[in-house]
Structure formats: C-alpha cells, structure tokens
Amino acid sequence: SDRGRCFGYEKCFHHLITCLLQLFLCHRSAFVLSFAPGPFVTEGYGRGCEGAVLNRPLTAAVITLSDKGARGERKDESGPVAKEMLEQAGYEVVETLLIPDEPALLKTQLMRLADGRQVDLILTSGGTGFSLRDQTPEATMAVADRNAPGIAEAIRYRSLQITDRAMLSRGASVIRKKTLIVNLPGSPKAVKESLGFILDSLEHGIKILRGSASECARP
Image (cartoon, rainbow, N blue to C red):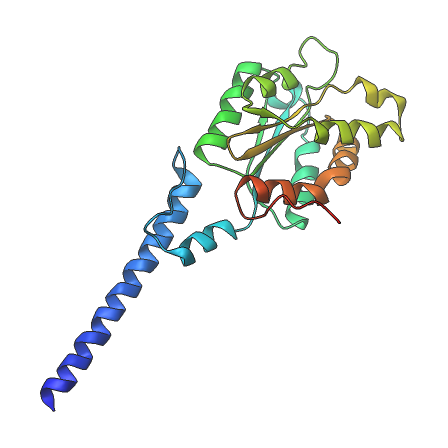
C-alpha cells in the first residue's frame, strides 16, 4: 500500500540521517584529536569511531636544534634523515622545525606539539653534548610528566659499540601526556644509527601510551 511504502521510505531516510550524523561525529572527533588541546573524549561517538582514532597512523614531529642552522649558516641534514626514516617506518611526520639552542623556545615547541597537536612521537636532534649551549636534555626533562630512561640508555649502549665517545651524549627520553619525546645526537650519521637502534621498538610503547596496545610480557 501507499502507506506501507511511505513507512519504508521514512525508515530508510531515518537510517541515512543516522549514518551521516555518525560519520560527522567521527570526523569531528579526529579533528579534535589532531588539533585541539586537552584530552580526547570518545564517549557518545560509538565504538567504531573510537577504533578508527586508535588505529590511525602514528604521527611524529622532528626538531633540529642548531644555532648556525637557525641563522642559515649551515644546512640541516639531521632533520631530513630522521624524517625519512620515520616515514619509511609508516609514521606521518606532521612538522619539521629548525630552531636555535634556546631552552625556552624548545620547551614551548615541545608543549605545543604534545598538548596542542598531540603527536605520538617527538624527536629532537642536537644539543645533547657538553657545550654550554647544549641544553636539550634539560629543556626536555623540564616538560616531562614521566621519565622513560630505557630508550636513551639503549641508544648510548648500542652507540658505545661504535665509539667510546657515545658516553658523552646526555640525551634524554621522556613522556609528556601521551607523547613520547626522544633526544637524538646532532650529526646525520649519529641520528641514523641512534634511530635505527630504537625505531622498531618505539611503536609498541607509543601504542600503549595511546591505549591501542596492552603491556604483555613475552613468554
């Protein structure tokens, strides 16, 4: 009957509107997660939306610290090396920065990337030595919520098998909210080596941070 067909159309229309609303909320959630400060809340958006957010590609940012580089007197070669390795590992590198060795500026950028952009991983390159201008570890520790020393220790341990001078690296590795921050040395060669030592293992830790993996011990 006409009445039955009408009821069927209304049901289909209602289902269509519901689907469109859910789609909008999912996209809105992803936008909030990527760009808005503060914790992300999935309550009311449905399990499918939450799963999509948890399974999104890992995001990263790379910060190179160099006074000469920031003044345009030296080409940044370390940052591009880290970016390429991250992308090859499946990360989406959302920002690359080149800034002078200024602790206050580094702290500002670390907090912006962790709290505002909510990236999963921040890599810094440079400023980890004994020079008076080398303040990267101090700035990193200043913004940390928790320490994650094993990553920096692994870099030093593996690097000592290449050069004794690895003991002079003061790089730190910490957690701020749900962002992992790792200091790498300043040279392109050292960045490639150091990141190569840890990159495969970082993914599991990052997924634990954002709640998409569990802390299961190996048998």
